[in-house]
Length: 253
Length: 253
DNA sequence: TAAGATTTGTTCGTATGTATC
DNA sequence: GGATACATACGAACAAATCTT
Image (cartoon, rainbow over all chains, first blue to last red; front, side, top):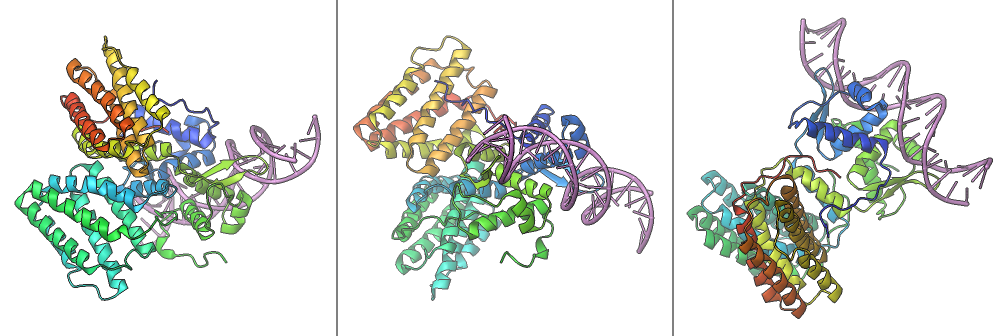
């Protein structure tokens, strides 16, 4: 009946992993923040009583997670680093690489979250930010003439949503939407999600985006929410024929 | 037969990171799946023309991301590994360690997603699964008498939601909710989120959970959705007085 | 520009630990 | 138990990057 703390199998953790844990503990104990310096290699060797190679493997572990950065030269060493959104997106992508994620799954989430994002943004964007959004919509104003153009339009449309997510105040909301957009973009690139063009639906989607920008400008949260909800429904319809699954590949850093 | 020419433009990356990338490419080229064996250390040394130490650092990088697992002994070596949900949760937690995430942010998401989860689960759970949920609610049936009990009730309540998320068919939805529950659990443990008891609200929350289980059993998706929505509103109210921010600490593996 | 100092980056040889047969 | 095939760990040396003077 605890549910929170899982008892972890006492698997034998390798020395480098142990050292990585010790380094984390060392950082937490001292409440270090981004940019603060860690002991250098020589000091860690003395501190943890391990060889240089082991220390370096531990540092690579932490570096791979984005927790530290390392620089050479005088004044160099390892420092507490802020995990970038890009890295976090990649690491999460590696997990879902192994999961069965369908378009339906992603759109169930988008339908729930994107209207929420839109409502929260109403009246909060500077005019330059609104202009950026307008430019993204304008970038694919004329009807696509070839599959290649279809593809680029599709990606540009997703970029519109990525930009909205970037503006989100709720960083968790922004992150998740960015993640889904990224997944969809990869699907678009690696599979032929754009080969069943439906110009009418496409035109409607573009109209939605323009209406959304207007609602955001006016600060009308409810209109923004409703418009986005319609847009999501249309986008889902547009992709629904596609049987697509996510491309199974490692996502590079 | 291998990659061929090195790309000078990316020479910023350290050798171990380069090798890690090469190993990933090697895996992707061959479309290896979980459990498939990678070359052993000696072979990688020959393959990538680097020393043992460099190969090992590269392997630790991939291991830290959950992409490979390593075993010693005959027949041992490195193998393609499936990234576990637990590891993915930790890595994502590391990212949000650095973000300003408020209770309001999390509840905005929960209000949008948990009703969706509840609706999707209606009529899909086996009776054993429903029993597990009932047990979790029963675990905190009597009113809490002390702050310590309040805390455990709070955690148990979150465990209820974690279990629901575990049953989700949509793995993305399940993952995100699990993540939020985990964050809230940590807040509960590391901060005094349970020191402003409100017995009436608490009783109502418990009632909601029982109603929800009933709706799930009956297969009434709309009732499940509505009940969960009410439950989320109540839970938010319960936590709203708390100024809490997430504890700033590294999340252990 | 150049030299020197500092710190990480990489290699090699060797020895030890561990799981399988 | 012994042999084998692996990863694991250590230490010493040298290379490369980068800062200071």
